[in-house]
Image 1 (cartoon, rainbow, N blue to C red):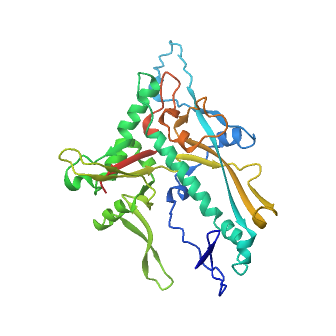
Image 2 (tube, rainbow, N blue to C red):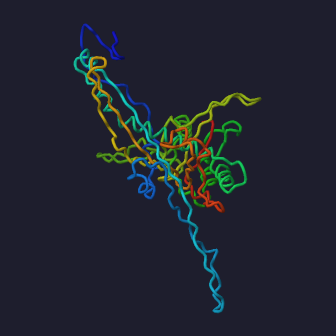
Image 3 (cartoon, rainbow, N blue to C red):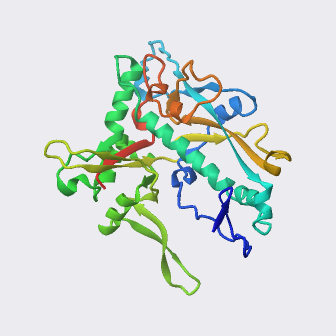
Length: 358
């Protein structure tokens, strides 16, 4: 089969293109309820074209520790709540696709630009997924160096919100019946109910299936027969399977054989902020009648507010127009929300991860 501009071309018999490569990327994280918005950040950034960064209030709480005995003769000592600040950054993205007019001429009128347009929704999910994974990588790479409040809070978060079982012997290095409950108890303590969903690699999910630890939801069909759905739960948390979850090939070290480390994220609802606030010109078509005998280009542009509930993005001076994925995955750009004297409790942050051998 002949080729022109990467298009299959049969000079003897023209045939319509009827199929495209199936999308095998699940992007379950990008579609999940773990992705939310922050109204204060949205109000600050959505309507200001060109705005890159905003700091919004994060209100503290009162508690019963300041309660005083009323003996009828003692003045009340009043206190005030602490108002913290949380940073959010804008990440702008753009792309474009060009198709030559001659491609349509030699393929019996196939509109290849229409093929591109039909995949834009999936493409945007790919972009969102990559940004979310970059944010998670950054959060779990926060700096613990030094004695500042931020460094101490980051260390406590990483100590409590990472449950790594890869050093365990044999099958104890694999996820098991108690793994999830131990992980969320370690991270949230008595607040562990904030964790609502688990996103894992298919290798991990298969291991849980083999142990019959995944419980698949059911529905009753029109004939009254109970059938299983593809959606499962693990210890009451919704399970999403996505092979985009991070893996790391660990080389043999001494008596420890080489293995693959699988990261499973455990998240709360709206734990990660990724708010599509749109671009001034989100879509644009351009016709160039001269180049290559004529060609069309589709351009897309997007703007997203990026953040994490309970964690602040601290914009470095090097980010001047848009945060790249590299910026988002850089640990020094993230801090547990604090006022320089005190940080918010780590148990309030609904993000944790399990690292296992499967």
